[in-house]
Image (tube, rainbow over all chains, first blue to last red; front, side):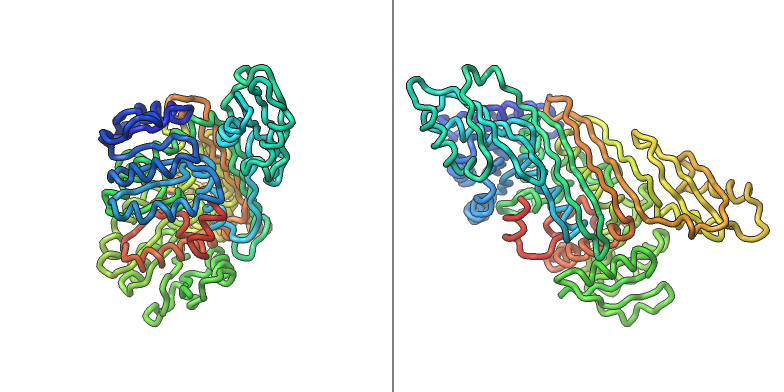
Length: 285
Length: 285
């Protein structure tokens, strides 16, 4: 049995707990909160379910204990730097980290890599939503003057999105000032963003989400190859499940002494699955 | 540059040639026909584009020369046995084979594995077509009394298919006898199959195909997670392209001394792609 601990117990941490309990080859090795000491953690793999900006500091502490880590770090421009930062630590401590292991970045990244291999020339568009973005919601909540927030992602086609940000304000703050801070935040600066002040964010809350990932491309010299990957999902449930499946892959890579930090496109898909190799190959290939 | 040879020059072999020419990191190391001697082949990787039932014998000869092999072997029940047969030969000759590297089995297998990791409980249906099945067409052509054939796959939903087999008969043969032989063939025995005698198979020929791969499942304890992978494609162009992308992966695995026989679900998707690791991770993850 793979001993899997959870660090951070928000939406994703709770979903991850359910996925660990449902996994035939895992046991829950404890649930830790941000302020807990990690000194006594006894686990093969820890799921770092903290806000994205806290991932690096917690991952480093866990790797130094020889524990494998899984996160769903989701600031796209910072993924490669995070991998390079963790890599030498993983190697020094005989640990494996799988980073950005959610659904985007994560399983969508695997689909994008596969489609590029299938049709090397062409354009891929990833259209998100409509749905609640967890990363953007956390970022909006962190804006000075915001009491509670919900950021909805609205697909406008060809990878262009609108952000609808519903906020409850702290008493006495100026909505225009909050809006200016929001629009300057790295999470919102590049998209059409609307801030809407509401009385209750809780009344709007729904963790449904979706993706329509499209590629039209060229295989060899043949044009008009068309692909689409669609899903409608409970967002934290899928993110938590993907992290748990990646915990299995990290454990296996560690046993194979392939220490290091990986993104999901760097690991064999079969490593994500329980069960023996022969059964999986016979039923899936 | 990776030197890639082609063995067998039918629909897939021709498409593979185009994909090799379009690849920035490959050069064509010759085109061989079934009856050619392979003694003088100078290649890093050979694409075995023969009919499925000839794959094993040719792959063995190439592996013994230390050449990596790629095939799109498509008899689902025989894939795992083929892997086990080639594995020790690959290891003894420091070679890598990637087997069943087309789109199904192949890239669809990767999607099925990924969806299983994302929603471990549930049902996956792979619906093919409408389109021309290359494997079934080759099998129909091999039936005694058949001069030419075209097997169309018609999706009936929930993974159930009809086979519409259009045949030109040899002179003087009895259509009923041919039909009986066809319906008993392993390729057709498990599906609703109709044989239709036509004057010209060539007049019907169209290599368009498609897939609608659907999974409704459960992530952790959360139901109603819904996924679909759709494509409409030129069939041999995609199969040839996938084989060429797998040639790149085989070459890399060989350099890493990870000798053996693999299916596509066992290889990291990034290995399928040209270009450096950092660029691919930054653009895809």
